[in-house]
Image (cartoon, rainbow, N blue to C red; front, side, top):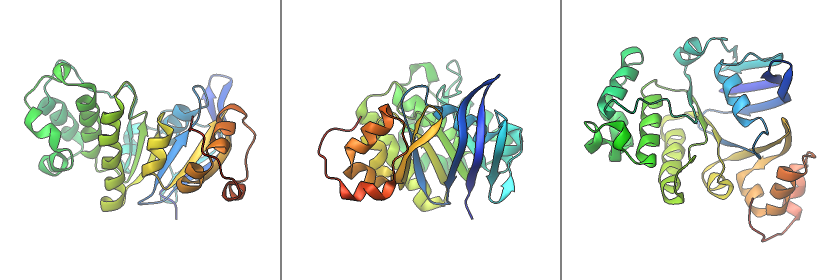
Length: 249
Protein backbone atom coordinates (compact mmCIF):
# COMPACT_ATOMS: atom_id res chain seq x y z
CA UNK A 1 0.00 0.00 0.00
CA UNK A 2 1.26 3.47 -0.87
CA UNK A 3 1.60 6.05 1.88
CA UNK A 4 0.41 8.70 -0.59
CA UNK A 5 -1.38 8.13 -3.88
CA UNK A 6 -2.77 10.55 -6.43
CA UNK A 7 -4.87 8.81 -9.04
CA UNK A 8 -6.16 10.58 -12.13
CA UNK A 9 -5.86 13.94 -10.39
CA UNK A 10 -6.69 17.14 -12.23
CA UNK A 11 -6.32 20.34 -10.17
CA UNK A 12 -5.69 24.01 -10.60
CA UNK A 13 -7.00 27.48 -9.98
CA UNK A 14 -10.43 28.59 -11.12
CA UNK A 15 -11.06 27.12 -14.56
CA UNK A 16 -7.35 26.70 -15.32
CA UNK A 17 -5.97 23.21 -14.71
CA UNK A 18 -2.32 23.23 -13.67
CA UNK A 19 -2.16 19.43 -13.31
CA UNK A 20 -3.99 17.01 -15.58
CA UNK A 21 -4.84 13.33 -15.03
CA UNK A 22 -1.85 12.77 -12.74
CA UNK A 23 -0.98 9.38 -11.29
CA UNK A 24 1.70 9.49 -8.59
CA UNK A 25 2.50 7.43 -5.51
CA UNK A 26 5.04 7.41 -2.68
CA UNK A 27 5.71 4.48 -0.36
CA UNK A 28 6.70 4.63 3.30
CA UNK A 29 10.46 5.09 3.57
CA UNK A 30 10.72 6.31 -0.01
CA UNK A 31 11.87 9.73 -1.25
CA UNK A 32 10.44 10.79 -4.59
CA UNK A 33 11.64 13.92 -6.38
CA UNK A 34 9.05 15.97 -8.27
CA UNK A 35 10.93 17.90 -10.93
CA UNK A 36 10.10 20.18 -13.83
CA UNK A 37 10.41 23.74 -15.13
CA UNK A 38 8.64 26.71 -13.57
CA UNK A 39 4.89 26.47 -14.12
CA UNK A 40 4.93 22.70 -14.59
CA UNK A 41 2.45 22.17 -11.74
CA UNK A 42 4.77 20.93 -8.99
CA UNK A 43 3.48 23.17 -6.20
CA UNK A 44 -0.09 22.47 -7.31
CA UNK A 45 0.57 18.76 -6.74
CA UNK A 46 1.75 19.41 -3.18
CA UNK A 47 -1.11 21.76 -2.35
CA UNK A 48 -3.59 19.18 -3.64
CA UNK A 49 -1.85 16.35 -1.80
CA UNK A 50 -2.09 18.18 1.53
CA UNK A 51 -5.69 19.33 1.06
CA UNK A 52 -5.20 23.04 0.36
CA UNK A 53 -6.57 22.53 -3.16
CA UNK A 54 -9.44 20.25 -4.09
CA UNK A 55 -9.00 18.22 -7.27
CA UNK A 56 -11.58 18.74 -9.98
CA UNK A 57 -11.11 15.11 -10.98
CA UNK A 58 -9.41 12.08 -9.48
CA UNK A 59 -8.63 11.20 -5.89
CA UNK A 60 -5.91 11.63 -3.28
CA UNK A 61 -5.44 8.79 -0.80
CA UNK A 62 -3.17 8.48 2.23
CA UNK A 63 -2.53 4.96 3.50
CA UNK A 64 -5.44 3.67 1.46
CA UNK A 65 -7.99 6.20 2.71
CA UNK A 66 -9.32 9.31 0.96
CA UNK A 67 -7.44 12.36 2.15
CA UNK A 68 -9.53 14.93 4.07
CA UNK A 69 -10.06 18.14 2.12
CA UNK A 70 -8.95 20.27 5.09
CA UNK A 71 -5.26 20.76 5.74
CA UNK A 72 -5.71 20.55 9.54
CA UNK A 73 -7.28 17.11 9.26
CA UNK A 74 -4.62 16.02 6.78
CA UNK A 75 -1.90 17.07 9.23
CA UNK A 76 -3.57 15.13 12.03
CA UNK A 77 -3.51 12.13 9.71
CA UNK A 78 0.23 12.57 9.23
CA UNK A 79 0.40 14.43 5.88
CA UNK A 80 2.50 17.56 6.47
CA UNK A 81 3.71 20.29 4.10
CA UNK A 82 6.88 22.38 4.29
CA UNK A 83 5.88 25.29 2.00
CA UNK A 84 8.31 27.29 -0.11
CA UNK A 85 7.43 30.34 2.03
CA UNK A 86 8.75 28.41 5.09
CA UNK A 87 5.79 29.68 7.20
CA UNK A 88 7.95 30.97 10.05
CA UNK A 89 7.69 34.15 12.13
CA UNK A 90 10.77 36.35 11.73
CA UNK A 91 10.09 38.51 14.79
CA UNK A 92 9.95 35.50 17.11
CA UNK A 93 12.81 33.37 18.34
CA UNK A 94 13.48 29.84 17.13
CA UNK A 95 12.13 28.49 20.43
CA UNK A 96 8.94 30.56 20.15
CA UNK A 97 8.36 29.34 16.59
CA UNK A 98 8.78 25.74 17.69
CA UNK A 99 6.55 26.29 20.73
CA UNK A 100 3.76 27.45 18.43
CA UNK A 101 4.14 24.27 16.41
CA UNK A 102 4.14 22.08 19.52
CA UNK A 103 0.94 23.62 20.88
CA UNK A 104 -1.09 21.47 18.52
CA UNK A 105 1.39 18.79 17.46
CA UNK A 106 3.24 17.40 20.45
CA UNK A 107 6.63 15.86 19.90
CA UNK A 108 9.77 15.75 21.94
CA UNK A 109 11.70 18.89 21.02
CA UNK A 110 15.03 17.36 21.95
CA UNK A 111 14.57 14.61 19.36
CA UNK A 112 13.95 17.17 16.64
CA UNK A 113 17.00 19.21 17.64
CA UNK A 114 19.06 16.03 17.67
CA UNK A 115 18.14 15.56 14.02
CA UNK A 116 18.86 19.23 13.25
CA UNK A 117 21.77 19.96 15.61
CA UNK A 118 22.64 23.33 14.08
CA UNK A 119 19.38 24.70 15.48
CA UNK A 120 20.13 23.77 19.10
CA UNK A 121 22.46 26.71 19.89
CA UNK A 122 20.10 29.09 18.05
CA UNK A 123 16.89 28.46 19.99
CA UNK A 124 16.93 31.89 21.66
CA UNK A 125 17.88 33.81 18.51
CA UNK A 126 15.33 35.85 16.59
CA UNK A 127 14.51 34.11 13.31
CA UNK A 128 15.13 37.25 11.25
CA UNK A 129 18.80 37.01 12.22
CA UNK A 130 19.22 33.46 10.94
CA UNK A 131 20.78 32.56 7.61
CA UNK A 132 18.56 31.20 4.85
CA UNK A 133 19.74 27.68 5.52
CA UNK A 134 19.03 28.00 9.25
CA UNK A 135 15.54 29.34 8.52
CA UNK A 136 14.88 26.37 6.25
CA UNK A 137 16.04 24.04 9.03
CA UNK A 138 13.53 25.73 11.34
CA UNK A 139 10.74 25.20 8.80
CA UNK A 140 11.70 21.55 8.59
CA UNK A 141 11.85 21.27 12.39
CA UNK A 142 8.31 22.66 12.68
CA UNK A 143 7.11 20.02 10.25
CA UNK A 144 8.86 17.25 12.20
CA UNK A 145 7.09 18.32 15.38
CA UNK A 146 3.85 17.32 13.65
CA UNK A 147 5.05 13.68 13.54
CA UNK A 148 4.68 13.35 9.75
CA UNK A 149 4.05 10.02 8.09
CA UNK A 150 4.03 11.75 4.69
CA UNK A 151 6.24 14.82 4.28
CA UNK A 152 5.74 17.17 1.33
CA UNK A 153 8.64 19.58 0.81
CA UNK A 154 8.33 22.47 -1.63
CA UNK A 155 11.64 23.86 -2.91
CA UNK A 156 13.83 23.09 0.10
CA UNK A 157 16.72 24.85 -1.64
CA UNK A 158 14.89 28.04 -2.66
CA UNK A 159 17.24 30.98 -2.24
CA UNK A 160 19.96 28.87 -0.63
CA UNK A 161 23.59 28.33 -1.55
CA UNK A 162 24.46 24.87 -2.89
CA UNK A 163 26.42 24.05 0.29
CA UNK A 164 23.30 24.63 2.40
CA UNK A 165 21.30 22.38 0.07
CA UNK A 166 23.93 19.66 0.39
CA UNK A 167 23.44 19.81 4.16
CA UNK A 168 19.63 19.76 4.12
CA UNK A 169 18.87 17.05 1.57
CA UNK A 170 20.65 14.24 3.48
CA UNK A 171 18.52 15.13 6.52
CA UNK A 172 15.41 14.43 4.46
CA UNK A 173 16.93 11.17 3.23
CA UNK A 174 17.75 10.10 6.79
CA UNK A 175 14.20 10.91 7.90
CA UNK A 176 12.83 8.46 5.35
CA UNK A 177 15.40 5.78 6.16
CA UNK A 178 15.23 6.00 9.94
CA UNK A 179 11.59 6.96 10.59
CA UNK A 180 9.97 5.34 7.54
CA UNK A 181 8.46 8.63 6.42
CA UNK A 182 7.26 8.94 2.82
CA UNK A 183 8.74 12.09 1.25
CA UNK A 184 7.64 13.92 -1.89
CA UNK A 185 10.27 16.54 -2.65
CA UNK A 186 9.98 19.41 -5.11
CA UNK A 187 13.51 20.54 -5.92
CA UNK A 188 15.21 22.83 -8.44
CA UNK A 189 18.70 21.35 -8.05
CA UNK A 190 18.15 18.28 -10.19
CA UNK A 191 21.48 16.54 -9.70
CA UNK A 192 21.43 17.03 -5.92
CA UNK A 193 17.82 15.82 -5.73
CA UNK A 194 18.58 12.68 -7.70
CA UNK A 195 21.54 11.93 -5.43
CA UNK A 196 19.28 11.42 -2.37
CA UNK A 197 16.00 10.18 -3.85
CA UNK A 198 14.75 6.76 -4.90
CA UNK A 199 12.62 7.82 -7.84
CA UNK A 200 11.82 10.97 -9.77
CA UNK A 201 8.90 12.30 -11.77
CA UNK A 202 9.36 15.16 -14.24
CA UNK A 203 6.27 17.26 -14.96
CA UNK A 204 5.79 19.37 -18.06
CA UNK A 205 2.62 21.46 -18.52
CA UNK A 206 0.93 19.54 -15.70
CA UNK A 207 1.56 16.07 -17.12
CA UNK A 208 4.17 13.40 -16.48
CA UNK A 209 6.90 13.76 -19.10
CA UNK A 210 9.36 11.32 -17.54
CA UNK A 211 9.52 8.98 -14.56
CA UNK A 212 11.96 6.36 -13.36
CA UNK A 213 14.50 5.47 -10.73
CA UNK A 214 16.83 8.26 -9.64
CA UNK A 215 19.79 6.16 -10.78
CA UNK A 216 18.37 5.77 -14.28
CA UNK A 217 17.60 9.45 -14.60
CA UNK A 218 21.09 10.40 -13.44
CA UNK A 219 22.52 8.08 -16.08
CA UNK A 220 20.39 9.57 -18.86
CA UNK A 221 20.76 13.32 -18.59
CA UNK A 222 19.54 13.98 -22.12
CA UNK A 223 16.23 12.30 -21.32
CA UNK A 224 15.81 14.61 -18.33
CA UNK A 225 16.61 17.62 -20.50
CA UNK A 226 14.06 16.54 -23.11
CA UNK A 227 11.44 16.03 -20.42
CA UNK A 228 11.99 19.55 -19.10
CA UNK A 229 11.68 21.20 -22.48
CA UNK A 230 9.82 18.75 -24.68
CA UNK A 231 7.01 17.42 -22.53
CA UNK A 232 6.37 14.15 -24.38
CA UNK A 233 6.26 11.19 -22.00
CA UNK A 234 9.37 9.03 -22.21
CA UNK A 235 9.43 5.31 -21.57
CA UNK A 236 11.63 4.81 -18.46
CA UNK A 237 12.78 1.43 -19.81
CA UNK A 238 14.53 3.31 -22.62
CA UNK A 239 16.67 5.13 -20.08
CA UNK A 240 18.93 2.11 -19.66
CA UNK A 241 19.82 2.04 -23.37
CA UNK A 242 21.33 5.54 -23.45
CA UNK A 243 24.72 6.86 -22.43
CA UNK A 244 25.07 10.62 -22.24
CA UNK A 245 27.49 12.67 -20.16
CA UNK A 246 26.01 16.14 -20.64
CA UNK A 247 25.05 18.23 -17.63
CA UNK A 248 21.65 17.98 -16.04
CA UNK A 249 19.18 20.82 -16.38
